[in-house]
Length: 171
Image (cartoon, rainbow, N blue to C red; front, side, top):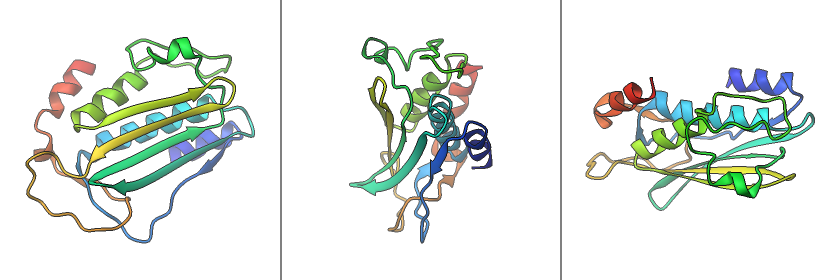
């Protein structure tokens, strides 16, 4: 949270972050889920104009956890949207934000490792909305989860025994 708040303050971008009364749990790799959210938030802040707004929403529906990051930034041209999740695909879109082109590719890989899905909705000149859907529990899991809003991620390395394979591929 401190990382994105500092980045937002430096760029004069307003953050709207959720608050929760009680935690709920998903069976996921905490470090990887944090990477996904921080990367999406960092991109949203980086592509927002000064005075812009970046919003993070989280909720649970039908056995899935949703994370949505939405910005009022420059948006992504339609012809480039099909490639944004490819490795080394990096475009400034007129902003001073520049990366290696690996961030969204890593987001997609990490989400898919958790048997989830990433969706993009972007309108040039208006902004971008990225939705991440993760299952509350991996297929075949027998662990029960309490009801309530999304806030806590369970860190259990046994849940994703092949996570190290992804780390090795992404160097």
